[in-house]
Image (cartoon, rainbow, N blue to C red):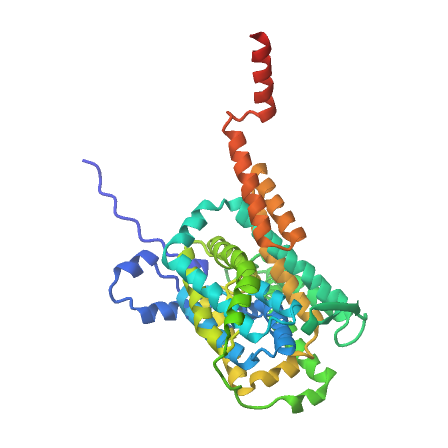
Amino acid sequence: MAPTIPNPPPISIQNQDPEVPQPNPTSLLSEPSFSTVQKVKRNLLLRSTWTELNGAMGDLGTYIPIVLALTLAKNLNLGTTLIFTGFYNIITGAIYGVPMPVQPMKSIAAVALSDPSFSVPEIMASGILTGATLLVLGATGLMQLVYKLIPLGVVRGIQLAQGLSFTLTAVKYVRKVQDLPKSKSLDGRHWFGFDGLVLAIICVCFIVVVNGAGEDHSVETSSGSNSSSVEVEERKKKRMRKVIFSLPSAFIVFVLGVVLAFIRRPSVIHEIKFGPSSIDVVKMSREAWKQGFIKGTVPQLPLSILNSVIAVCKLSSDLFPGRDFSVTSLSVTVGLMNLVGGWFGCMPCCHGAGGLAGQYKFGGRSGGCVALLGAAKLVLGLVLGTSLAHFFNEFPVGILGVLLLFAGVELAMASRDMNSKEDSFVMLICTAVSLVGSSAALGFLCGMIVFMLLKLRNMTNSKPLSAVWKNEIESTEQV
């Protein structure tokens, strides 16, 4: 009779990150005592306060320039936008448990800044219509069907194009003086000064030294009491490196920008008024709905579907294995955000793969990361309101460019898993067309066409079409 082998003890996964308890997802679903409140607490649990706070800064390089430009050029209610987006940050952090970003809809913002007739009512109408469409796609399950049909190479192409677009914009912010309200680059930036090239280069070098290429830095510790002086010295050096590598680099750079903003124009303090901005319902005429749909919703929908839902869903599964989210839930949350805030003048919002990549790059690992950012937005919106725009107008644009640069690089690096030449070919075609045509929809269309042509080609027993054609000619001649 075979000896009885005792069951091995369960393997604990807490050693993956000792600072955060990682309960077994299966057991959580099977225990009736695990309530919604406990799930929210787990999702908002901070891995490390400084690390998560640093990760929250990774999305500001995109958020601040767009919102500030619309506030100054189109009289967008900054206070309302801060309050609503802060609330959205807290809710999405509690729901998803990862640093799910809340970003302005970029295509709508671009139209608003380039078209003088596209004012706040048109902006809000386009956001509401975009949100309603995404809500319908998510609620009916059509978004899940779209997600299954789009090949990975096309998704990676959209991510790579968006990442490179961010990096190009970031370099423009660093090299050129910017007129954010008009979205124009002016003369070359001076080398020295509170917003000079030297300052931006120092910030870049500082973040690279602290964060590296994004790898996790671990410090091994020696055990035993009879350690030699060499081992003790080596442990001291490792501790020092650990302290340096754990610095909240993005947070430090952002605080530096805040200090420099006050130094550049100290009188800005007198332009800041305490108290929230009034929240009013935006009146939208029939013409505003029409123009909002034609000029705003139509170009924004492809970008929202591809980059704000599908690309975010894929990127979250890459960065957080085991925490897969359905495109249905992402589409529904984007839809609800705009159907609520759009009526009160909040900038149309969505999730964004670039924001998720940027927050992950700087250390965001939990929903508490974006909840911290949301709490800060709520406080600023309620205490300072729209008057905060005077301060952000003095914020060094070069520093915003530095933060945006690393967010773009992190997003572009998601495409490094393209192992086959065929997938890489589709990805690069999609990326090239998206960048040159400045349209994610056009890049997506070309990528899908190339993908289908390659599949049709492979259906001919892996023979090139030229070979098939040559064989047909030879058989005809023999007859």
